[in-house]
Image 1 (cartoon, rainbow, N blue to C red):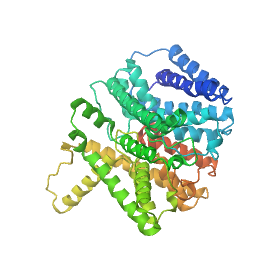
Image 2 (image 1 turned 135 degrees about the vertical axis):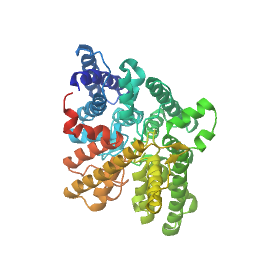
Image 3 (image 1 turned 30 degrees about the vertical axis):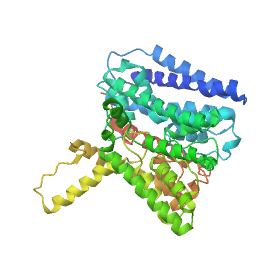
Image 4 (image 1 turned 90 degrees about the horizontal axis):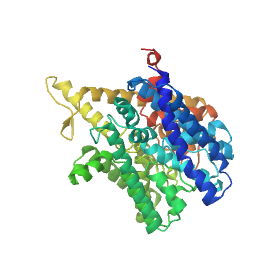
Length: 486
């Protein structure tokens, strides 16, 4: 493994990030005139000049990235990007302490939506725009953007793509990984533009508000420019309905959209077992929560249906938007939402969590083990959608599931040691590792993470990254054997 080649290619995504800082800079200087444009100039110059210097002056090696170097580059990109992205918060005085600024930035890039801001509406427009924009950048991934723009990596591009894209295995839409990355970003941008048009043209929301909602919805992020979240638009059913639909759309495997557009057959989506389970879980959960709200809280049916469908979609897709304080709902509804936090959305989507397809495979594998207990000679290939799942994929899912559970248990014990009550400690870990954002109790939708000690914020920040990059990419770097030079 060569640190030199990792640092060289780290320069490109760092420079890309510097260019993306231009959006809040222009908004601050030319549109909002909120007086904090200087807070973007320094990090923008640092990222652009530092990134270009790394790529230009570090000698090139005539080979592709190895698997180890790919894992290191992806993890370092997200860490360094979060360090640079935290500077506008600190320089503007919005979040003057490093830990708080790093937590907020990591929460944005990993599309978690957990916040330490206590007065969101009082912040400068450009800072909130940057806060929401970080979600949109991280939704499809800055490394994937890097791969789409710069095809010079050869086979190393495939390793970067696999390390960043969520799911049991990175699904290629084209023969070349570069073309796959471009296709994904094209779909992502097209859906974002569609949502923005509906909000700004049809719903007639101001451009600033439409941008922020789009930046929070399509990456299933959860940050918004109002402390009430989407509850600020509760009197606009069109807005809440459109956001619900696009949250669900963002939680679907983007590969399905590509195949529908390419083959022009809707059956590609409707016949997909992960999609059917995903929609089935949504319908079942929304129905049960609606009944629970009507029966136990006496909520009118129309209000219960509106809140239940929105909140189930928000939590299942790990977006984290809220229209009501669901922590005040009956225990059954809260338990359902907590389970949805763990499962999450589909593989290949912008959502987090364990992923629906993994749950499907684990259930079928468990059933096969039960059958093998009384019929050991039975040959039962594990199939999903007519495709046989290899034992290596099953083993990787089992390993990922083990890491998922161990990380939750370890994080829960650590947060409990800091003095948090059991529900708050568990919910904070599940909500961050699943990239959901708001949890229950002390980190519920009506409160935030500001009260958590700095050590806890740092651990939760790492859990956000581990959850976004799906454990192996980050945890591999903690192994001593990873750093043995070969």
